[in-house]
Length: 78
Length: 303
Image (tube, rainbow over all chains, first blue to last red; front, side):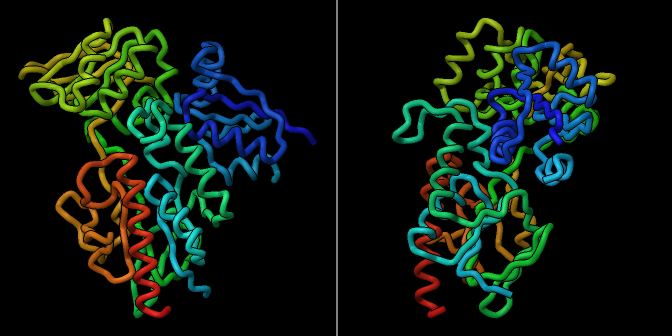
């Protein structure tokens, strides 16, 4: 089953880079939303989480704040 | 339980460099770290690491990581060391996941951001207040922000923010900025920075997100409307888990010329130590020195 994965990130944040790297290594397709250039994405992220820290990862509606590898693995069923 | 030759705690410039030397000495070792790259990964532009006239923190951290992992080094990422204790010739390490044993240890756990300790700081963390301009700066495009601090890390944060934010305030609690003069000039040249000297933050204000700060400036109470607060008031060493290890009053681990602590077999390197000057290149050099110290210790003790 393919899950819908969105990553809210900025290009400079090290944890964002690592999170995206982790998804790629596990062959998970995801949509990258750069909240620094995309105000709508930034607003969406803040509305979903009530906070501004990146990365935020949305796995089929399950929201993970930060690069929490264990939570992410659970959400992805890895 | 398996006994490793060496366990390296931390994977910043010091820990990673130690790991490269350890791999080349064919030691049986592992690296335990919460993150990879340490503070280097959070730095903005780096222009003083020999060989790189210009590189960003995340890029340098990535290169460090590639260098470490090309030897197949065992890295326990996301693991936090809670306790460390030597009994007999063996050092026991307890983490938030499991226990380990080793004949030697290099503590290279670095430093973390010092907190302001004012009302509102915890509530607004990641709601406009942050300790990482590199990560979160881009979210404040076109907004007014305050950088708290007056040293190199504050100036580095301010210089990242002038390109993004509308207005940058630097809230400095001394009479004038410290840090490198080349950074002072860049700050002066920017049109959208105001430096408030002799000023300290007393409260973070807001509802859901940060809306302002309260400060005492030249003895007067004042409020400043900002949407972002970047705390850059220095660092504290991650040395709390190393209970029996001697530290200076700043909680930095005291090491000798060979990076040995007061306990045989326990070495330390990088920003967590009392070695003067905290620089990426110094931490890296200290990491290699610590590993060579470990190598002599292990061969001298016939383990």
